[in-house]
Length: 505
Image 1 (cartoon, rainbow, N blue to C red):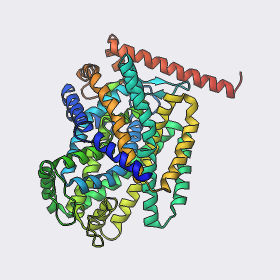
Image 2 (cartoon, rainbow, N blue to C red):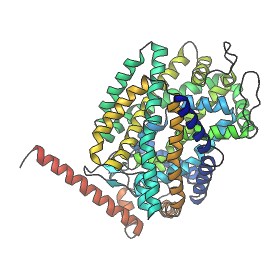
Image 3 (cartoon, one colour):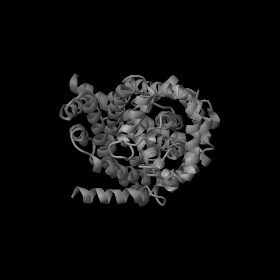
Image 4 (spheres, rainbow, N blue to C red):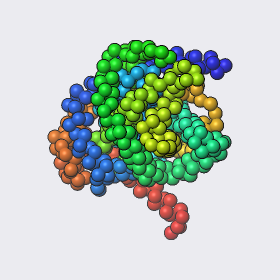
């Protein structure tokens, strides 16, 4: 039975991620948005990083969490096992050239990430508790009138709820349990129990709790991992130019089969580069827009730019570090002496860091990195899944979803997951398709409102009052700001009702 399911999922994945569906859709959407936005991701990257990481919040703006917390929540969901095992898998099967195509998904994906985060804020709403809701499940229906928008929105909603238990839950919990057992000898049963309890405790506080936790440890985990990778590259600095040479040459020629290594051709390098690239940075999937919609921001463009930096950090920094370490240490083509075949993708990054760092440091860095990256992904995706469950079933679904999600973490930690990895690839692709179609349809609105804001505030230094004053006669801004006032009013009404219930007058 499992073999049949595995075969079906593998076939579906090869079609969805093949040369006729997602690869051209991802590439062309990112390229089209890059052109329409005037290369926004390159020209405004510095200002966006300053706003999101240095300033961290939009003073005087309305929302549930700061821009920095929205960024770290999205980073928590994306900087996961894909940055360690996913990169190794892409290079191991597609050769060093696959890293080039991961860069392409990152650079063009920054435009897609900007667009979906912009729309997430532009069309956000609030539930009966005053908490902001946004993402493709809302903006596809609100922005695209008629049955087309509704179909796209509901397709995204259903696929996201299903995907959150794969990419954002079981695969991550399983990676944590495997590493904890291998490195510390801890039984996966107890790892699953601890993970489920910790996840449940964080989820009780909703997005504010998730935002505080991710803002605390996501920057630390990324910094620790990148510093270790930079040390290895410094030690092997003589091999770095050759590594870049391999990446660029083999991106267009593929890698010839040698010895026990399964060689790749051009299309395989592209396919695995794109598939693992989007698995890592989620650009075009629409997921990050859900976190962006909660951010305190004075204009959708500002949060869109902050969210865009997530893809830059994830792919251009973290993925690049992993890929270069694997290539410069030569572990991507290492052969297992017992089997005569290529070393396991799951062990490839660990072997690379172990070769590059003294003593047991490499082993511990990767082990701790996997555990921290994977757990952060669980937290980020719990919010994505919850918001889409609420879209289907209403606010009453919040508590049951958190309980089920925490319980599935335990299942993931204690179960073998070959089928779940394939399921995750399929669901990721199915999530991306309606969102990418929606981005293309709404590209005119995105470009028009973006250009109007950038012309006014190119360095992103305007205050909330200055933004309101400048756009006070702009119909698009007035529509959005009127909506924001209504959201704040709904939030205040709920809080007053709650206070009166606790302290009767």
